[in-house]
Structures are given as C-alpha cells and as structure tokens.
Image (cartoon, rainbow, N blue to C red; front, side, top):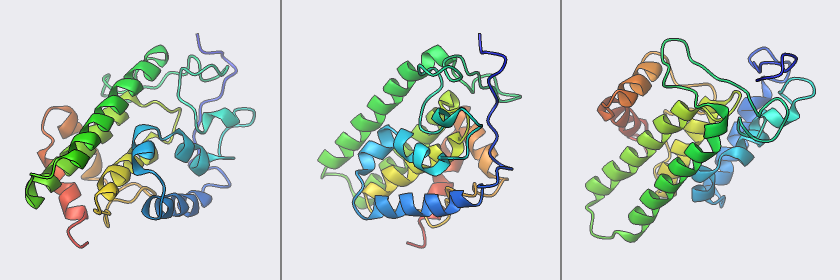
Length: 208
C-alpha cells in the first residue's frame, strides 16, 4: 500500500517550472550533437532526472529519474490512473517488466532499421515514424513515472526520428503539442488506429 504521507507530484505550479524549457532545450541539443539516441530511446531516466531535478516534492527528489515501483519509499507503490482510460498506468510492480519489453522492441526496431539498406527512402521513413509512434503510445500506457511521462515519451520520438536525421519541428517536448488533436491522436493509436498520429509526425518533419 502506498504510504499515506507520500505526496502526489504535480510540478505545474512549482516555482522552478519555467526552467523545464531550458533543460529540455539542452537535452535536445545533446541528442543532435552526440548523445546516443538509442540509449535515450530505451531508457529516459537520465533525461527525466535532468529535466525535473529540483521540481519534485520536498523529500522526494527521487521522483525525478526513477520509475514507479523502484525501491524508494514513495515510488515502490506509487499508483497512476487516467480518468476515462483504465489501460493507462501499469501497476507499480509491473512497470520494470513492461519497460524492459518496450525497450527490447525499440532496440529490435532500431537494429533492423540500421541494418536494412534495401528500403526505399519513403518506406524507410514510414518505418521510422511507425516505430516512433508506437513506442511513444506504449510508453504512455505504462506511465512509468510519477509525473513527466509526456515529456519523456516525446523525447523517445525525438530520439528515434532524430537518429535518422528527421528532427521534428512541430513536436515540442515542452510545452506539450496543441490539444486538440494531441490527446485524440494518442487514444486513436491506443485503440488500434495509428495512422492519424503517424500523419501528424510526418507533418511535424515536413519542413525539415
């Protein structure tokens, strides 16, 4: 059971909220100038810790950079739920396992893309966008962090697409993309129709 004295985490009104944009910019610059894109795509904990450092509740600095279910007093049983969609928010004890699954899938997809030289440029781009969109939505369904999952998930998209030179111009990590259609695109993909999200991501790189 989650200890009753453990605080929920909401950073939107934190005095340091304005620093998130600067930290995100620095992390994205790192992706473009040498950070291992695959390492970020398969484990966002370091970038999550960088972005949300000192924006956590008092006594819970470990909320930044660690998954729910990890061996910290207020994360071990930290629940997450999204009203209206019971699929979102893996139970804390399942987070690590499900993250290993999704990370293995990302790694397999990237390995295949790196090795395949027979795809046309058009088909290759479609595969990149398909991998990024599905990884993003699967990550959000797990919701591994106490908060900041949207930021981390959008970093995954940047990492996968940027690895191949497709840097989204209209897919901000902070603030979140315009809503609508952002939430609707995620729900449609979760419901089995990834096409609208894929088109949105293609449009996000159209000006590159």
